[in-house]
Image 1 (cartoon, rainbow, N blue to C red):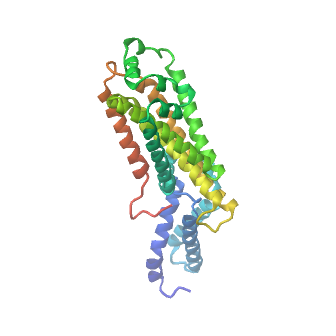
Image 2 (cartoon, rainbow, N blue to C red):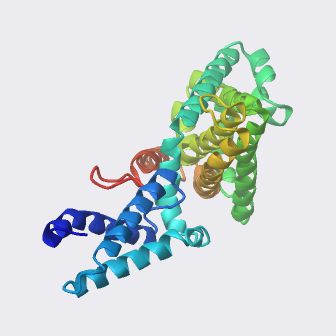
Image 3 (spheres, rainbow, N blue to C red):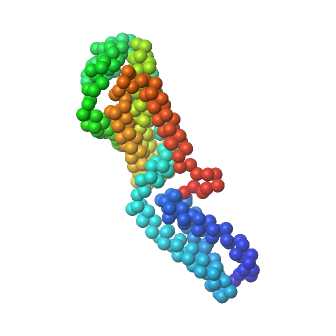
Length: 339
């Protein structure tokens, strides 16, 4: 029994309005019922509105309020009890601009570890290159023999010859597809290697760092810094972070298998991280597709056809944009409840 209907309405109206607002966010795809904490909060709002509807059933003087609550509770029931509907309606733009960066930030520890492993590997690679050809032979696989046989200056001179400008004429699309396939394979391997409790993911990230550091120091020592940045930045500013994101997924998987810091069973740990792993893998793949296109149609052109300052500026803008996207995109206002 309600002693004071007016006071009751004033007290409960904020709850109804919040429920109405959150149901709108769920319908628009701005909130997900797959988040346990959020779904419990929404269910509590729904149950309270249902109880309020039951309490005013005997008041014939408030037909509009009763109709409003009946509609609100009905909508809430439809959304809450059909949560699986949202999983069957994939929204690419929402996934790219909100789900992916949000997942990246939630598992940022894995990315930080991937960066550290790559950086340590790069330091070792740089140190080995300082020992001359013996260090190069110890680092570079046989298919990269030209990195041992030629100095960076010789390679740059070859790349800048006029006869080299159109060497991929008519083959750029195929070359781009090959780059995408190779890079996506390497990245997915870094993620899948998490099944080894993250051990092979650590090895792969470290070795990639060794190669990267060796190449960078080799060019820097030979005075080819401008060429190095002009060559690597356009595609590397996206490709390298993509591999790190894939490695991030592998480390997340490895940690879940080991079970650090959680009382959950192995099955539950894997179930909890599966959406994040799929998102990180998909995000890395999208980044690598873009990097492959840039590498084939932009990075392979050198001065004087394409000035290095243009390539460096382009790569820098890409890197800044990627950082802003990953760390800022999809963030909610302080007053906006988390999904």
